[in-house]
Picture (tube, rainbow, N blue to C red):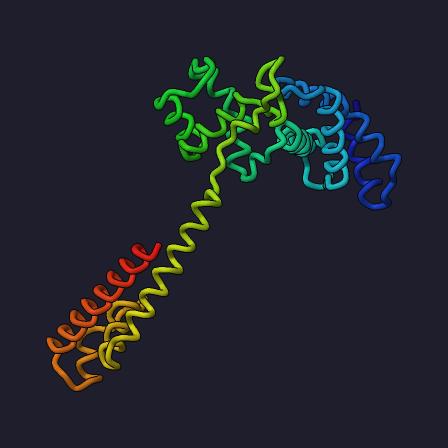
Length: 267
């Protein structure tokens, strides 16, 4: 361990002269601090040696950025870098699926187990609504994030190629639900949509010019024109525009129905 005077001396040598021997002495003198902090993260199922190695990386970053003129000891500054390095390693190594992308989620990941013990909610399975609400309020995250993180921590990663039974040939991936549209349904829907458009197009051709224009403006546009706008355009009353629209719609409806009926008979 270094005295305050030795620590300040080494820190200034590194800061002003980039003395690697001074930096080496500061890192080595704090290895026990790194090991102590790393031991606090033993419960995440990762080798303690790896945690200590990552903590040493954080320690080196702390030495690199330490400013002795601020008036505090290196250990006080370095502990934050050590914890950050270890936590980042745990988040990247604990699961194949990325988790803890925001500061709030990281805080939730590393405090959830502690809060569950405090609330006597250490049983397996989902948390009760009361526990979810309490944890959500204390950590300032949504209740959905608490439920999701608890399930992630409780259920470790499993291979999709893992067999369902020791003697069976089936794998877990065989039970995954395919959320995409069925190819046969997709083709059938496309054909149906194409057919409807073809019937509608043929029916519209049979309308008179003004009927076709009003039908399009009132029934087919994403932003339909108002009766007032069309009445001014054609120099007729709003009621007359409405009548033409209704008549055109009835003609189109009848033409489409008859064409569809003819197709059904032909098939």
